[in-house]
Amino acid sequence: MKFFVDTADVDAIRELADLGMADGVTTNPSLIMKSGRDILEVTREICAIVEGPVSAEVVAPDAPAMIAEGRELARIAPNIAIKVPLTWEGLKACKALSGEGHKVNVTLCFSAAQAILAAKAGASFVSPFLGRLDDINLDGLQLIADIRAIYDNYGFGTEILAASIRSVNHITEAAKIGADVVTAPPAVIKQMAAHPLTDKGLAIFMADWEKTGQKIL
Ligand code: G3P
Image (spheres, rainbow, N blue to C red):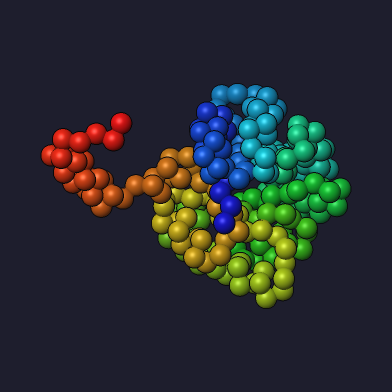
């Protein structure tokens, strides 16, 4: 399973990349806004930190303008994946940009039907948003399972990129289902290391070690 980091925070990306835990990065207009930085500048910096795909999102409303923006974003670095929304216009842009050899990540996917269209349009990645479905009492993980089954039925090569990850549980469940990639905020990735029994066990070991009076170094 590949881990993408869902942020435009360069320091956080660097920390995870140094640990081999950032196979790629996903950004979106909200994350760029949060970074307070220029999209081209920050994206270029991110592309130099990770080897894998860095998703940068178009913001135009129609396909011709999305295609133009996508080409501009792709000029930033060879590891750019152009992110387009899962709208009819976005699918047209996906078809054109993937036809030119660009990696395209079709984002804002909320149904299996939409995911089929993304695959047909040549997407490298489809991004189903788990958390936002859960927010409205729908089952985000079930959507991942449905897309996995459909893509496997027909051998679609589009990778399932589980997005809008809010919890460690989202990541483990998406992994069990067989999502190809998860993109998660840095804090959620770090939270994966935490377990109360680890903390408790470590406290006992440290207390007992203290009693031995020994030192390793
Ligand atoms: O990858 C998409 C992600 O950034 C959306 O997450 O938490 O805003 O739904 P969220």
